[in-house]
Length: 211
Image 1 (cartoon, helix red, strand yellow):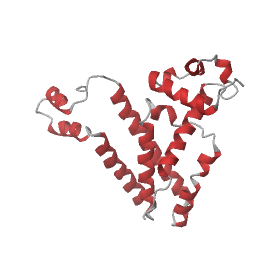
Image 2: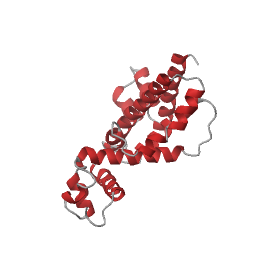
Image 3: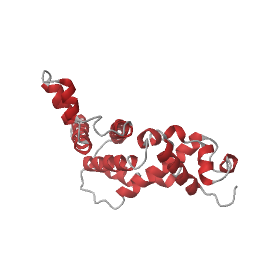
């Protein structure tokens, strides 16, 4: 174990590399260079890139838990899902390629997983079947991941602010396709679009359960 290294410090350096280079630039070697050491010095903590991503994903999920800690429950489990979705998106957006990087990673800290128990216990106590709880959480997570991947790709793909401008799009389209034009304007504001589409997802979950 190299002197002065810690799991927390390695994760912090990995997030710095992610922000600077994107997911393709995150390697054990690159993180070691960020810390001013050789790659073998990190192997006590992470054996390969997947281990590194798992530790990064665990830290991100820890931040989601922190955002939700202390939230006053309304008694409606669907409100909890909305809050979870908002927290997950906000944390993913804090880092370049956030949704691509952190989705599907293994949570290595049992305390992060245990933090879910009060929510799940509350939902089941409210009469929601456990299988429905798991399905609903996975559906909301999948929605957020997909939404943020698209959101970040658009934000990161060009320094030209007019690239996705609805007005510029209208100019290219002409006046013959008003509904296509309207669709472009409907997706321009990310926050409004996120809330609108999440509402549809939540309504579908609610309807499926008949609650």
